Amino acid sequence: MKQYGHTIKAFFSGALITTLLTVPLFSHAEQRIVDINAIKQKQVLDIVDVYELAAHNDADFLAAQWKKQAGSQESAIAKAKFLPKINFTANTTLSDTNSDFELGSFLSLAEIEERQHYNTNGYTFSLTQPLLNAKNLLHWPEAKIKEKRSELQYTIAHAQLIGKVGEIFVGKIVADENFTVAKAQLNAINEHLEQAKLSFKLGSVTITDTHEAQAAYDVAYSHFLAAQTALKNADHHLMILTGQNNTKLLRIRSKLPLDLEAFQLPELEELREVATQANPQLNLTRISHALAQINLKLAQAKHLPTLDLVASLGASNANSSAFGSGTDVDFYNIGLQVNVPVYSGGAVHNTAKKKRYQLEVEKQKLTQAERNVELELFEAYHNVELVKTQLAALHQAVESTRSSLESTKLGFEVGERTGLDVLNVQNNYFSSLRDRTNAQYQYILVVLALNVTLGIISEENIYELGDLLVTYSEI
Image (cartoon, rainbow, N blue to C red; front, side):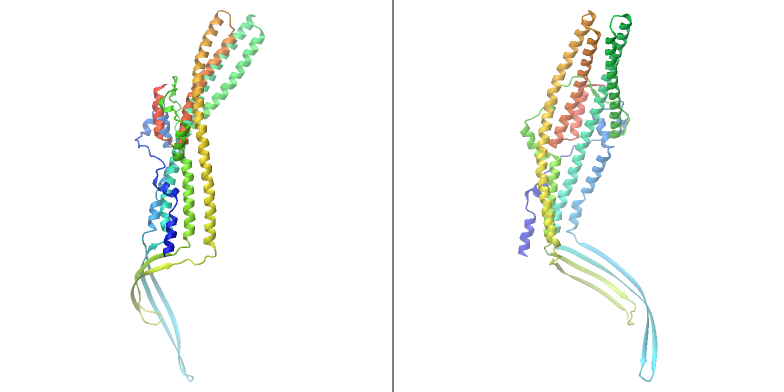
């Protein structure tokens, strides 16, 4: 038995399994009491309201919650393998026999017929207590890792919900902003078109000016229709997410500062260390690798003997039998039962080989997952820097186009600039306002995306973002 002891000890080696059992892979946010009915009564929803409605309505997230509950039973199931199994059986049998006997010598024969009707019944309690079973010992760490997997899958689903809320919330506001700008541009161009038609009738401009104005109006109208359709789609996405038809959202109305502490990035190397430890997809791949290790050890454990304590007690009673006499028996027994696998046609050996190959597959997946996290972090980090730089440029563009519009209008009043000049500059101003608004929300999204990659996203981010939007927004 000494050699088996060394084998069992070897099953529990492996830093990855130990790490997964001892290091927390995620954190839980503080539970809040939310009045969903009160949120539904609001006229204007902020991002926190949208998140709370989504958390109570999104089917994928609700399914993840139930899946987490199901996974929490793994330890109890594994623990049961160490406990005794007790069974009770009872039986009752009604028998009816008909026997024919021939008696006599070669001179005379006599035939006797005997009919019996009797009942047999009994019961048995049986107990099996595992004493030595390597597979049971391995099922315990397997269960703990599976529980962490279900919790991590819930964490991933939660992060995906937060990302979905951010995208749909921002998508709705951006669509609304684009529609507003497209409508304003269409109205301005229409006004210019009417002036061009009137001027042509008065003979102050040529037909070319009218055609140019008409062409500008047609293009603006196509943009207006596209923006209108995008807004309808955004409204529908929001309705599916929240289950509500309330389409009024709190929007950023003022200039979003670029020096907000929450949006300042540390060095990329520091973030790389965080992502390596906390990225949920990477940790999920680590769990799959650890489970593949255990599956290999479970397959190898089928070579090992098992030792069980077995006991039973019961009674049986028969008021008669085919032999004409009744019985009344009470019994009990206790002992040890050893099961030594000898040969199974090579199934155990080949199953272990299969599990070893699958372990190599998971090892390569883990390597690729580490590389993917490195790439995602690099892209997410530089996306934040890019959008921040673009936003700074768009802040300046708004001021520049505003000044240009004012000077162009003044030039038009004194006859130095044409109406088309005013229209073009006005379109540039509207476009810069739209682009800055879009960039401000894009800035928020890329920061959220970076937190997702790092694995530190939580509902606290939504509440902090909600406070930020309230600070820099107007209803």
